[in-house]
Image 1 (tube, rainbow, N blue to C red):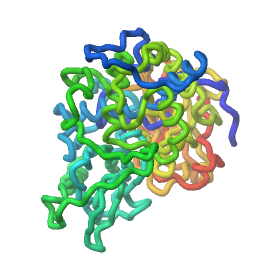
Image 2 (cartoon, one colour):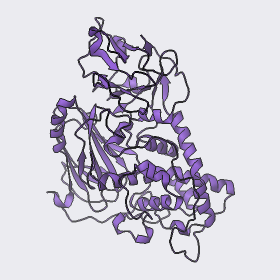
Image 3 (cartoon, helix red, strand yellow):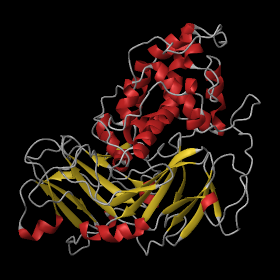
Image 4 (cartoon, one colour):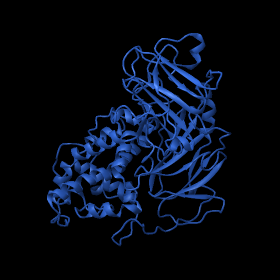
Length: 522
């Protein structure tokens, strides 16, 4: 049975759980969500650059239209800037899941109640990350035979859109070798080597591998050790480099030609002298003034072409001097435009905050995002909102993440009460892989408990009722012995949340015909 959500809006920070935010744990620590997405302090646009004798031409528009276009520019550029900063962190500092560019970085331990900055953690999966740069040449990527183990490996372009996914659901669980090539690469490979073309020169591949408890970590590590990414010139498929071609999305009749960031003129590079690898990416972007933000946008856009359906927004941005090819430094934009861009930040942040609160569909006290996640088309506000809440959010076909905050009475879940979650036999989570339920404290992380148990799911030795139904017990105090196998420990008092994860969900879950049952008081 399904009931509408008790409240039409939820905390934006809580909704991050519905996007599968735990994927970010593999690449960066995400700050608590203040929703101050960009600097709110207007600044001079000079930024130390030498002014030219004239400014970029601005097409006539009203003051209101200029303000709206400036806000649209921030929202459109935000995921590109955020992912570029995340890439710098993930490839420039040691840590779980981090490695230099074009190399795999692995996580080999589960987050615990003592893990700092682990918002919405999970003990379902271990992650391997490949931050790639294809400006010089393709990569030959190898995925080993999974041996029946479930995994999925979404590949994201520089704008945070998922453009491909490997794994049992799509390509099978056997050994795979494919060439990951940039948008302009033209060349020849043997017929048995599949070509996966990235829409952008840089991006991120994230392999998320099923792990069945701490004792299984060594087995996952063996799978991870079989992952490789080899520059084509160093592989057995080496061939002379092919010439680049024009981009279909560059527009204005000019060819888009990728230029590696390291080769760009110093005057066109970001004003940040040193890459900060300690401060979370979202916080770094929040601190940027308009000059830094749009300079970094221009840097990354020079390497990463826009999508083919971006013509309307690109035409609007060109009217104020912003070009996806990054031809005009921020300091040489019209001063009126510079001021509008600096003053647009608060409105952009508010638009993204509101998009977060509207995300997802609620039934039975659970909220699930079933639309507009992973791929976004021209919904740039949704893209920015989900990038902020959970960069690397996958499409729903691979996993969905219902979140519960309230019980059957419409009151917040509280450790002082005992609860039950009862699944009828025909109401069990419909999945092709597996499912779990995680419990999080008020800071959206695991909480210490006497059983050292933070989740339950279909891989655990649960006790089913004689009729095939399943009852889970959520409480601070341990229940009687017959219920212990189905017990999920809660805090002693105070609010908490539940996050269900359905991996490779079936059609009923994707279509919204199925919803988790109510969380009832025991």
